[in-house]
Image 1 (cartoon, helix red, strand yellow):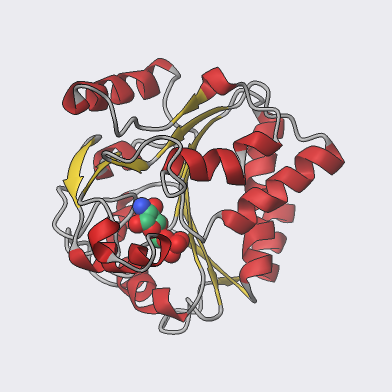
Image 2: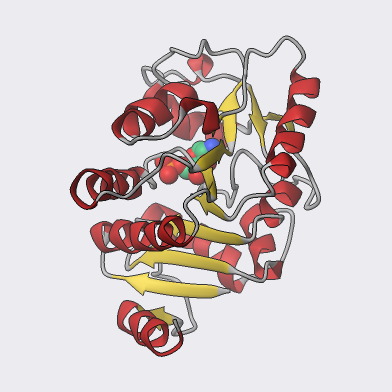
Length: 260
Ligand code: GLP
């Protein structure tokens, strides 16, 4: 696992965007796994800027989102469909038929989950999976206790997650859906490379456990320690409890310039 500690959220977003843009320039039909939440917003903003000012081309890029609430209409302001189109897809030249987000209104959700897995395989698998992390260490909507081999499926959300997300639903936990579709931990681990982003003190405990703690289903992100190509970018606040020195941004740039 590679952990890069950067100064703040802006540096985190810029470095993440650089990694994504390098992949797209090397492989214009790259398959990206995408995440929602506040954390990747700066990354999406920077990719939009690179598209507009530097011609970063998304026309052949394929995307698969991690998760979606079950039962929210697609155009609901809190649906992940709405989030992705508003915050990213509408602002770049992505081909809508290359965009995949789980359908929380599919008539048969279980069948839809199997279709989603098959669709990822059809495109040759995910080249780079972007992840945020929940305060309880969840990735996607894989809550603590999720099977480490799980695939795309229905998950019941924990109260802590629903409480965290209530701020987006008029502050009312009862408005937050109880169920979601999420790629499984096994699905995430199949990605060729993984980029986990964490910013702010509220994530420091989850990052400490995920990066330096034991691998356990109680902290789903800790399983990333088993993956051969995972990079974690954390800002100073999220890195607060880490004991190892890990890498600074300067260390990272030096290694990249030496070894490419
Ligand atoms: C939700 C999403 C996760 C995300 C997490 C953290 O639970 N399903 O994919 O990582 O929130 O969100 P934020 O980045 O807003 O802290």
